Structures are given as structure tokens and as C-alpha cells.
Image (tube, rainbow, N blue to C red; front, side, top):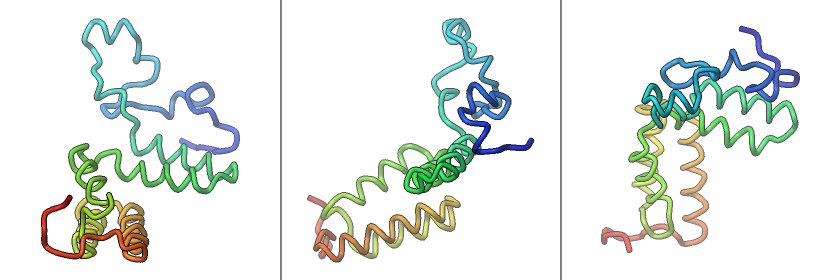
Amino acid sequence: MSFDPASDYPLGSRRPDLVRTPSGLGLDELTLDAARAGRIGPEELRATPETLRRQSAVAFAAGRTQLADNLARAAELASVPSGTILEIYTGLRPHRSTAAELEAWAERLESELEAPLCAAFVREAAAACAERGLLRADDHAPV
């Protein structure tokens, strides 16, 4: 399937054939009637990595590089369990993690969760936290 980020946006109206749910349902199958009948559940309403990567390409083509970067990271995280994402988010809060703990998250993102862009983001955040004195310096439990 060819995809042109400049002419295929918005995907939902110009290229609905490119938008699928996690189980492969097409947009035309996502109806209120289907939800009421129990044929689709909330898990089907999540964006897929493929759709997020396409949205990132659209943003990049439009010169919106920060949005493109965010969508690319979101594509990496789309298949990561929400509990893991919450743990990482909590770890990134001020004084919650040591530099070593954040590096461990970055390594796990990179190797185990196949999210190198997110790993780089965690490393960047860890450096910023270190510079601002926002890392947990000791082995005490987080505040």
C-alpha cells in the first residue's frame, strides 16, 4: 500500500483503508451498533503503531517536527502495557528515580520493548533531571 503523507491526510477520510484497529478491523466496522452489540470493545479503539507512524510522517511532511517526534515515540509505546508506561512515567517524576534506575528503564525500552526513540527520550530526561538536581540521590524510597 502506498502512502503519501502530504495528500493522504486526514487518513480517516482520504485513506480509511490504511487505518486498522489492533485486531485488524477497518474503520467502517467501528460503529456504535457494533459496540452496543458487544462486537467491539475499548481495546479496539487504541491507535496502532502503524497508524501512529503514518500520522508522524504527516506531521513531519507538514514541518511539525516536534509533533512528528511525539507520534513516533507513541508508535513505539502503542504495544507496551499501560502499567509499564505508568511505571516509566512515575519514574520520570522529580526525585523518584536515581540516574541508574532511569538508565535501566532506557535499556529496557531499547532492548526488551523495542522502543529506541523512547529510550533516547528517557536518557535525555535523565540528563535534564541531573542538571537540575531532580534525581533521587540516595537509596531511600521515593517521596
